[in-house]
Amino acid sequence: MKMTHAHPLSEDRLFPPEPSVRGIARRLYAEVRSLPIVSPHGHTDPAWFAENKPFADPSSLLVIPDHYIYRMLYSQGVPLESLGVPRVDGAPVEQDARKIWRLLARNWHLFRGTPSRMWLTHALSEVFGVDERLTPESADRMYDRIADCLHRPEFFPRALFEQFNIEVLATTESPLDGLLHHRALRQSGWRGRVITAFRPDPVVDPEYEGFAANVAKLGELTGEDTQTWPGYLQALASRRRFFASLGATSTDHGHASAATFDLPRLECEALFRAALRADASPAQAERFRGQMLTEMARMSVDDGLVMQIHPGSCRNHNPTIFARFGRDKGADIPTPTEYVRALKPLLDRFGNDPRLSLIVFTLDETTYSRELAPLAGHYPALKLGPAWWFFDSPEGMRRYREQVSETAGFYNTVGFNDDTRAFLSIPARHDVARRVDCAFLARWVAEHRLEEDEAAELAVDLAYSLARRAYKLEPTP
Image (cartoon, rainbow, N blue to C red):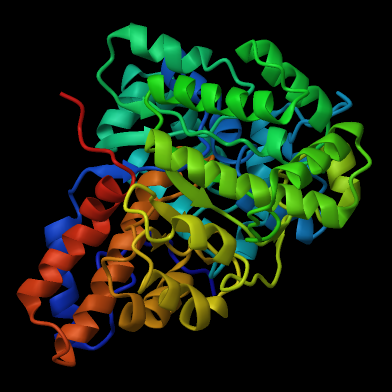
């Protein structure tokens, strides 16, 4: 029997089914639904806002840059080439954006139950006014509507930024990036606040492709002798200052583990030489990365940049996809990650220092109640990042709150960040987080663990205030 396609969004989505608890969640959500969006960590392209050109077509906006979308399709046998994902060797890939959109529509059922479906449905409905489900029959109608919208000024990147009520948006760049788009934004006169974040992985990870050449380029950019350990550290400090001058308030570190070390200088120099020669063993590479986390913490104490650690991903797990398409193509897989002993060398030096703000994330949910919540519930320098990546989902967020709230409290967490490359998913992701948090708080009110006025205050903090405070994002004058 063919079903009619009702409006895809319910006002009560993600709220508890019990009427009395749902009523509390509705009241809490009414307090936060219209708050500005603080997006302190993500991977959108600053060129979109610097150049403010119209997005080309629905597929290049909503499908091709979104690894959540194409990893699911690839898992079901859809070649990435047929989705228009560029190859590193320049070999042909699908260029017909309408064909890519139709391919997504034919496979839309694969996304049932996933956050991707929720985010894209939100974007289609709230941004483009689409009131039907994506199907092969509706695909062309949707495509034409979105394509028509994208060429109107109100759908240009800056206009959408303002319509989404984004107060501040952080992108993420390598120390080797000249930040030309951020400089252009500073000079444009536009009032939207788009800032950068310092991601030093290419010059602190000996196993990153081209590490030695990257370190040499770092020296060229800074005028420091990066073939020596002191010169290398001075160059990193110099680039951090440059990033801060263009609005950065944070650094980000995507290491394979959370291991930190506090090694003697002679061993640091020996490890650095081995890394530059490209003959560091895996164990030496791990020690070097761990030492660099401690060095970055020391620099954060000096310059005030908030430090984020995103460990525990086995990057580029699929060598065939990595060879054809490069990094960040949906083949990163979570691994078990230990924190208590791993972070101890760094925390021994800086964990009690109020000048350090360290935000720790995980892809290993088993560590939340056992390790991370107790650590954050003790060390003044350490806060917990929100449910991240594969767990940026309704169930992941619920598990996060259930596992950390009793031990770390709410105020040793940092609110929500969307960590996305997909611009139009930002309001959707924040809306999901706000709904899930209001549902969680409503349950605590119903169980008489919180008064409703306390829950209302908490809802605002979780949606807005904690992120501003943790990332030092108070509005500019």
